[in-house]
Structure formats: structure tokens, C-alpha cells
Image (cartoon, rainbow, N blue to C red; front, top):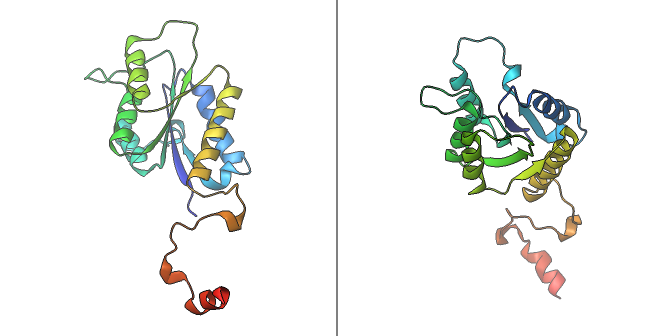
Length: 181
């Protein structure tokens, strides 16, 4: 199985530690490392491409959009939209699997960040966290559930699971007759 690509999106300056933590964790965890390949913009070498084209290309290729939302909205382009919001909107447009993790803050949120959070909450269940360890645990639980829901891993006995690709043509008539007798 080809690894599922996870696009980690956030305001880089606000979540630099958390982004690196998740990147390293998804690479080093014995289970998650077999199934997921994370992407963070910090790992892109100097190339002759605009940041927006790199973001769009990576969102195109990803299987999962993982958004970290907090207090800051970040850089705004000429239209007043942050890269994080553009990435979220593009992942939504492409009908990507999206998971949002919201950092509880003690300060005031930027009004546009509040609007982005409300936009996400209208279509997704999000998970809150306070510490990097809580984020790591929440991401682990979420990705394990993704693997279970998509039957990459199973938690039920093999003979109790369904094969969604099986058809009646897969049955051996002679063996069915033998069993029935």
C-alpha cells in the first residue's frame, strides 16, 4: 500500500514546534509511519515556484488535510486571505479528508481566524488541545480511526469482517452445494 499523504496546515510562526513534532512523530511512530507521509512547507527546498503553487500542488496530492488553528490568522495576500484559509478551502473544494485541531488560547483570536474556525465548524467536528502532547495524542487517535474506517487495519476477527469487493461470482457453487448437503 502506498502511504497516505498528510498535509499539515497552520500559521507557521504560531505552530512551528507542533508542526515539527507531528512531522517527526508521523515518521517515527512504528504504526503511523507505515501508513502516512507528512508534508510541512518547512521541508521544501529552495525552488523556482511560488509558495501558493507549492501549497496547491501538495493539497492536490494529499489524502488528508490536517489543520492546526489557533489565535493568529497569519499573512494575508492581496485579497486579504491567509495561506491557511486558502489551503483549507482548496482541500474542501477537492473533497479531501479534513481534520481540524483547535488550540485553546488565553488571548484574543484574530477576527479572521475566528471566522475560519466557524467555517470549519460548519462542516467538521474539530478537536481542541492545549499542549503539544495533547495534540499528538489527538492526532494519533484520529489517524488510527481513519485507518480503521478505511479498513487498512482491523480490530475485529478476520472471519467476522466483510470484504466489500466480494461478489456472488466469488462463491464456488460446488462448495456451497457440499456445505448445504
